[in-house]
Length: 219
Ligand SMILES: *Cc1c(COP(=O)(O)O)cnc(C)c1O
Image 1 (tube, rainbow, N blue to C red):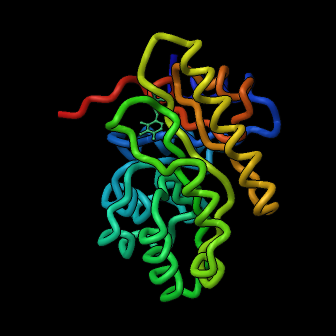
Image 2: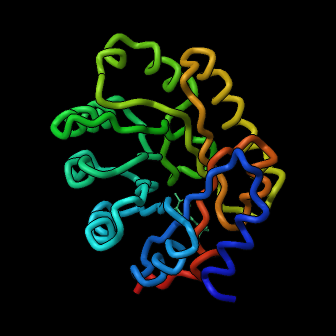
């Protein structure tokens, strides 16, 4: 099936309240344009430089989401155009995003990445660290960022019961944090292999790559 058919098939299964981020990392602009031409406007990338290059080359009504791990010294390369940064896991990073956003007189939307997986390799804050952050005075002083929700990555496993528990714990954390900050609205979780389960467990934003664009070649 073509990229465009893959996209349309996935979209036809998504409830109206769920946002689809087309994860286009490693893929050429021509592949992205195939989905753009049938209406896709939200793309997710995990490398800032690659995202900046694609942003240069592509139409300007696209929302670019940074879904990868963010190094503080690279925030400046995306501050002018990024729409949503999914992987924020420290106050220091939030502070840097705020500083760079200010230079462009922007307010950048961010998600707090919550660690829901068992794997040590996965990044993220604990629910209690996120709660402390949202209630801190230093956080309230950041005027050029807006925390709009949470993001999580489940363990890479075939054990779907475990994945389900992890998705549910993210939703639970979201509900707790929303009691502190009623502006929160987004739960970003679920990828090609598990986005339907993620939606059943409360995800409102799925990040789907290989099911749209095909498998990635990292060479
Ligand atoms: C690559 C990636 C995805 C998409 O993964 P697929 O399995 O190709 O759908 C989603 N989220 C993050 C953070 C990623 O890095």
